[in-house]
Structures are given as structure tokens and as C-alpha cells.
Length: 499
Image: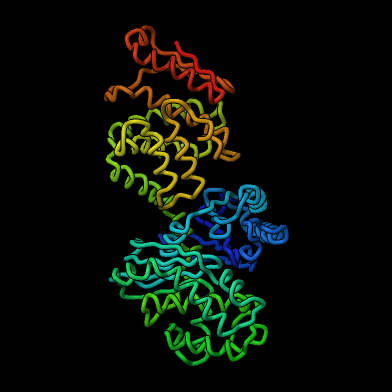
């Protein structure tokens, strides 16, 4: 079976700190029907040493899991699959070396997303899995290495936080070997309390009408309370205290007596329970409903948006333009010319990938955001903003590439600007940067007039523009700019000629 046989099938892969998940769904009449789920407890977070290095053993387990996922995804094309890494890969040193191996094992690109982007996707997945609710919702997701807190309405997240505490990290630090003690719970909750302190007041002041929990820790907690007859599945402070007391009475997760707590979940459950208990106290939650939807489902719905022209990244770009008062007409002119040049140059420079066009389009639309700060070196102000902003829908690497294009769109091209881009993008980014710079140059007058028709000749590391006869003589400023640009583009190992 090929991708042509299942054009409405999409898949999401979540490389979590505790588990790797894959979910496959079919789009039917605007809804998603889940057709397959696979979850494997990899505990990548536990394989991260004190120096942020992924151990060879953890890496091999992860790669083997991704190889099994690959078999299920073999019939799907790149646009039908979205795979992301979360907290462990955010923290990992030299993660690019691991990601190259991981992508080869999976057969699809893997994005490392920020904690705030993870929170946005968690909220989207939870909101789409629950009945509609008229008021604000609080969504809590306890992962292996991070905990996400989100308040939103409908499908839109309004306040998002990602905290460095999770079920794996907490269990390893405070319940080593699965031994459960009063001191362990006290220290685990104290650590969580300190993480929650900066967000405690703003979240309580924002308020919500319904508290929802996602992730394995929260679903397992709701299931225990239902099977013990304490609640009908919802989580309460009294229920959390009861589970804590039962774990303390046992003293060791190897011999716990909680019903239906899996052998895989048990070693990381005490840390998750401690984090959840402190979240309840800090935010004064009296009742929480476990939800099935989380990051994977959010990824699916976000992918649906990309496939139906409702891309969250486009909304982020538009919001950034408005926030920093970009002259939209000029941005549109530069974008149109950049994409026209790309259409001519893509075959010779191997830029046919759809992501090249997307990246160039976003860069053209955002290349002047730095002007709202200062004209001098405004390209560097813009690059800083784009590297460090929370841009919904973008991965770390996408933001980095976008910052490189915008930061290099004028004046001298700094070597350090390009060094942050890894293969396979290092060559592409140089060509895209040359295209963006030429588009900006051709619209320096900010006139509504279109650039003249040009004949474009290209080689592996060269580009020649042929203007209509006499045009350059009539536009001496453009000629001077092109002469200067030829010197600048030499830094990209690209020879520019024109006549």
C-alpha cells in the first residue's frame, strides 16, 4: 500500500522522556478516527547523564523503537507524518548527532519543540478530545521530564508554561530504586513547589472553570481511584492523599498494591504522584478530569491545519508582523519576488522541497520586524527576536533557520550566523539567503512597480541576472547595489554576475 492509497491517513510520533508514542488516524468529514496506536516505554530521559549526554544503551533502545514505528509508517509520505522530541531532546547535548540517526531509523524528519510549543499542542489535543465547554479550562500534563500547565478557551491556549519537573526525573531523584519514603515525598513536593512558585499566583488569578489532566501519570491516577471505589475516575485532593498513604505503607514499588498500575508505569509513578499532588495544592484544584487527548492528538490536529491552509505557523508570522508594525505591502512585494526567483532557481539548486518555499516566504514576510526596535542593524534585532520568541507551530530548528535568513538579509554576512545550521540545511540556507537578499535589493525603492523581467542563468555556485537592455543604466542605484552584493555573496561561496 502506498501514500496514494491512503491520502487521508496522517500520523504523529512523540519522542517523550518516558515513552515513545505513535498514533495513526484517518481524516473523515473533518474529524479524526484513530486507526492505530503504539506506545513503548523507552525512558530516554533516564538515559541522560549529568553532562546531558544520551547513553549508548538508551540511544539503541530509542533507535530500535523508531525502527519498529517506521514499518507502520512506511506507506506515508513526509507531509502525512509529524514527529517531535520534547524535554529530554531539548536538554540533550550534541542532540543533532542522535537526531540524524533517529531520523534515519524512523524514515521521517524529527523536530525538537520548545516547552511552550509542547504546551500548546497538549492543550489542542486535550480540547479536541473533550466535549465543548463555554468557560476557561486548565490543562495539566505531567511528562517524563517536564510538566505543562495551560489555560485556554475552546481550542485556543491563552496562558502556557512548561516546568522542569516530571515523573521520570522526580522518581529518579527522590525515589531511587523504587523505594518510597516520607522524606522522598517531602523532598519531591518541595522541589515541585519551588518550580511552581513563579506561576502559582498568575494561574490562580487567571482562573478556570474546569481542570483537565493528560498524560500517563494522571490517567493512571484516575484509574486507581475508580478501581478503589474512591471516585468515578476524577481526581481529588483526598484521592491523592489516599494513594500516597498506600505507597508509603508498601514502601517499595516492586511490591505495591495499587490495582492496574502496570509494571512499566510503577517505577516512575511516585515522582508523578508527588508532582501532581503539589500542582493540586499550588493551584488549589479541587477536582480534575483525566482526558485521553494530549500531545499526540494535538500533533494530529496541528497537521490537519497544515494540510487545510490553517497552519499555526502562518498565524504566528501574521501576529509577529502586526506586533512589530511591519509594512505589509513591502513584505508582500519582497515575498512575491523571492518566491518567483525560487521558482526559477529551485531545480538547479535542489530547493524543490516545500519547506524551502515556506521558510523563504516566512523570512520575506518578517525581514523588517527589527525596524520596530532600531534601523541600525535591524536585521540582527530581528534575528534575536525570531530565535527567542515563542512562535506557535515552529520547532527550535525552524526558528533558528528563519532567524538566519532574516539576520543575514542585508549587509555583511557573518560567518557565525551560518554556523548554527546543521545538515541537510547548511547548503540550502545559503542559497535561500542569496534569493532573499536579491529580492530585498530589488525592492529597495519600496515602489509598487514590479521588478523588470529577467533572464536567470545558474550553475552550482554561480548566478547571473540579465536585465532588459538599458534597464540598469536607467537604475544606477540598483547597479551599485548589485555590485556591492556580488562582494557580499562571495561569503556564501556564490558568484553573482549581472548585465
